[in-house]
Length: 265
Image 1 (cartoon, rainbow, N blue to C red):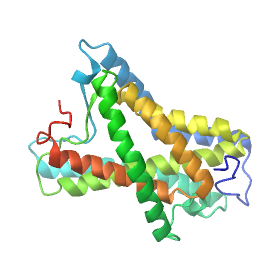
Image 2 (image 1 turned 45 degrees about the vertical axis):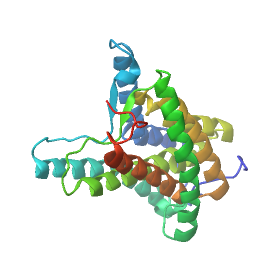
Image 3 (image 1 turned 90 degrees about the vertical axis):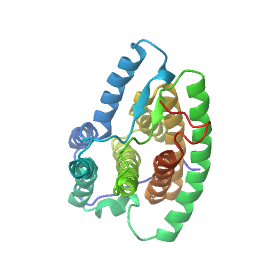
Image 4 (image 1 turned 30 degrees about the vertical axis):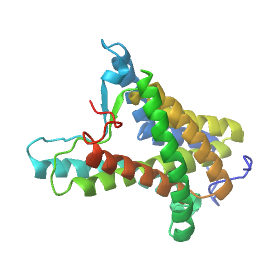
């Protein structure tokens, strides 16, 4: 894979580097950067709490209003929608520069078949190995027990889990890969430095899961950056990420407590 392959928009309206730097910091602060800070605080709380990490739980999709399903649904949809706002900001910034919005980073409908096929293959490779890695690091005491969902058994549970998975995929791949690499390239970062920055950022906001979540997602980040450099599109990465999360969320909902190999709190 060619690490030197340029990616992202080549805008007609040049923006000063100082503006690009501050803009990048703001976009990250509104999205995954804030999540990274939150994950660090959560991790410090976990390691300073009595007992091992594997005896604690990291809840990903929990109820916001237990016993009140309609209010809970409203909060779930509100959370999903507001999490996507930074992606809209990125699209706006690209349009402002004459770069064609998110099409500049390959998040469009121009190659649906190719994106779906490539994403499915990536998901199969990363998903299986990721599950084995999680089980191993949790057993070794380096990871919390990840609870992909703890929603009530109501009619909207599965659709909300799918929507949550898609939201995660869009936010992370558009911002952490497409947008960030584009900006770092234009700011003069070397391809290797940009790869490390993107991968470390991805790992950092998964630190709330433990050391396993940090390391596993750094490795995943390296793979996805290399694939993006090769393909020039985040579309396949969004498909792969969404598929991995959908299988994790719905698989846990269907199997938790029914199979011995799947850890539960």
